[in-house]
Length: 338
Image 1 (cartoon, rainbow, N blue to C red):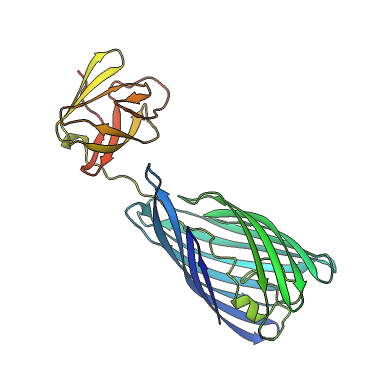
Image 2: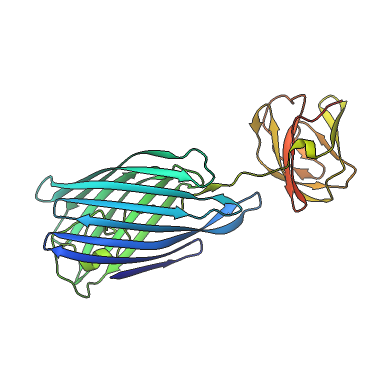
């Protein structure tokens, strides 16, 4: 049995692995845990901890391995969670006395908690390791799945009874709010017991391929490589009231200048998302001066005393935008222009 705890400014994780050695050539490792990431939302860089639970099992033999897993990320006010299930089979072949190639293929499905369209498809992995000397091994690896792609390289060196390993990983986000990431890990492992085997598993991989034979003990003390590295979520969509619920009248005073009267909105700071000609511009923060109205010039770059950004292009005859603040959320679309 092994426990792994990670604590950082924007990442926390706790994993529990339980391994069983069936015989000298086969083993099974069960995994359960929770990953938490502090993700940004909104226009002011606000952050929120989002959780993702995971379970998995990896069966490993001398020449092949098989794993299945399921992850479930939570839905919050700012993020939509997801459920993902996957399975993968890997096989190993000795290219030469010093080089080993491990190839994997599988299938993964990903569904969102808000019932929007998810994704599913084939997954693939590759790990090429080379025994440079009796105490040094190098490897390169790549992994493709529905939520992220990984590409990297690493190395391990025998130091006495222990192993020093280093690994660089580039993570390309492919779903929702999973962003690109660069990671560098350096570890030192010292065996405390366990019977050596000839296993070298992707189900519970080392940071880099160890120069000596892997042990069940080291496998249960390592994060399974088949689990997603990032929390799988996407930004929650705004739920604004319909335009008919807000009394609005646009008055075109001069060319490309409109005066907006809104009696239902109180004074305060609001986030504004402009929608022009079918395109959504970047959000910004503006000051709603009073209940008497808002004044704006389109598509210039000023609104009262605050800056905003809008897409290039002509102003539509019926300007549309969203505003959100402490007093409510309002969508202005299909409004009348006089």
